[in-house]
Length: 406
Image (cartoon, rainbow, N blue to C red; front, top):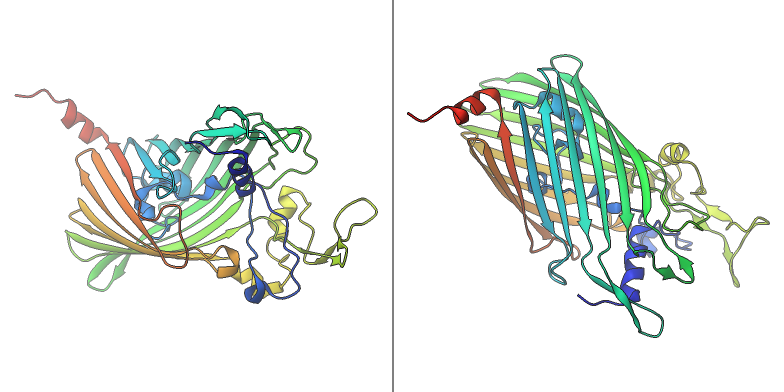
């Protein structure tokens, strides 16, 4: 795939935190108020199961991919150990070499403890770099990845917690010079803190299970793509909270309903002061904020002020919440059907889509598929089939597998 320097700049724009637009009216009437960060691939749902349920997963039954949605769920997983592999083609309608891959594995230490690790890899395909005159500088393969590890533990029979560590690497320009500045790979480290609750309940003639979860993810250092960079960009620190209700109608049929709420924990772009000649700066060369709060703050301060710094007050803060709704039906714990819906306000990204999916489980193997149907605008995953392959083991299964044939 051959693309010029313009394509590289688009990738950089996609990955870096953008400055606020100079608008004088509420963005709901005049334009977009999207919050953008560096390394946004960290908040893309990587697996097909949650991908079939509208990107809901913080309170779903635990599986190998719980690292992304809520690592505290691993303490409740009912297998000894296992791993999963997921693959999502990206922008398949335009190109064929951009993809998101996810590999994760877990091990249950005992009934109360579990550990897990994962690798999330985002490949941007082959890009041919050119100079301002169109001369080729070489073909490169920009990529980003994160390496994660977590420890999860039950505090009681119904609640668990987890902490996770993450190393982030983002190499978008392969050391090229952009606007005369030498670029470099961006790196960061981050952590997650999560809680999960799961309890059996009596729903009259139906056995049920309620659950809820909280996951504050990607609490970490800002990132830069040049050693000469004065300002560094926030990574997507994110709060995900949600609840679930599972109804076991009989020994064969069950239905789970999930509802997730999601909000970035980084500063909202302010509105900067401007006049007829353009932006207005203070004596230190910084743009003057006309409405809202300055985003040039620490990571901790950014998390705190993300709750009250929107230039248009409480109404804009509420628009920053995205909502995911999912359904999962299982028959005999072997075959599943899924559906979901994701909603994001039109001023904060305008992602609205339906999802459908299916799953199979047989012995130690499992397979999930999902498909996304956009509503308002094109989506990188539309008309794309995503899949996840599982391998789950426990002592009984392993003993049967290893038993010599008669």
